[in-house]
Image (cartoon, rainbow, N blue to C red; front, side):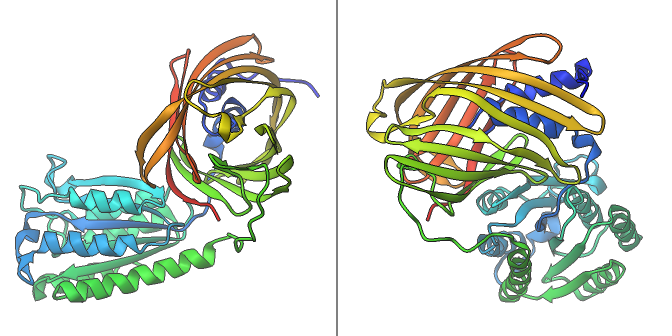
Length: 460
């Protein structure tokens, strides 16, 4: 098979992403993910349950409901409901009428972007929502923007709106929303709840909602009714997330050398991270062996891309790893990777990880990318030095952890891209005992940077 060198622009994207230590396997997995991003423009988004909450923050929400301003009631009740959301949901928060934009009829803002297991950030985002200074209420514009947000993936999707009244910007609001939903072509349900809305405006909201396929409207005349309505909606969305989940029941845990105190590779363990490239989940499908020799298989997955990783463990710690085939939704297998030699350890035995302890890790990887007439092979030789620097308190969306900080320096030589490329990378990982990696960062000599923060995890 002939090998085609990718164009300079495409090659640069691959190298830049390779330079980011995206996951525990660092440059290796980054190179595989690079293949996905090279072809990303040709793909449709993958399917996943998604919910976007919309909150009215226009000045009308300052009027009272149950003795408190409606904005305070809505923030509090919605925060309670968000805490009960299924962690498998991708969720976000949009507001309108806050004054974030000077054009009042365009004034809507995605204050918490869509992400998996996003409950904590949404609850915090709600606490920061303040009333806007202008009188207009661009409800329809917020709903149109939300449809565009969720249209990034194929669904199923839900939009939940808490409003204090009708749209005040466009008399054709229902038709505009209907057209946008039709244009987006997504599987969509819309739930609109009116908090203590005057009767004439409630009728206007009902008329708007009636024009939107899959949309419903409920009156909530007081805080208790709002809580009841939102609880029912969230329960329905959670049920859909459970039905759409492909997770298997958690198997019985068996201790082995891969069950490292700082990175417990146990059957059924999983970690989800928020990264600049999107949300990423590591899931251990199987792990077993003895305290002297064990193996673990992990899947690394993003919304459209997945790849297996095979770990080898022993009394010296988590020693090495190898990879399978990178798969992309709608394209199938697009790349394969093979570690052809390795030495040192990925993570030494826990009793060695005292502040100041250093260790090496070296490996060489051959990667082949092939898709739709494009084919390239390249080899990466990686030399790393790691140092345990001490325990630090780290706060991420999943919580606050006392974590072991490990700093690393990496030299990478790549051949097969038309010219030899040398990159240096500085990395830091924070490992919480009994949990695993809670945060990681990296920066390259080419000026790129990456990182991730733990948003949720399961360790049986």
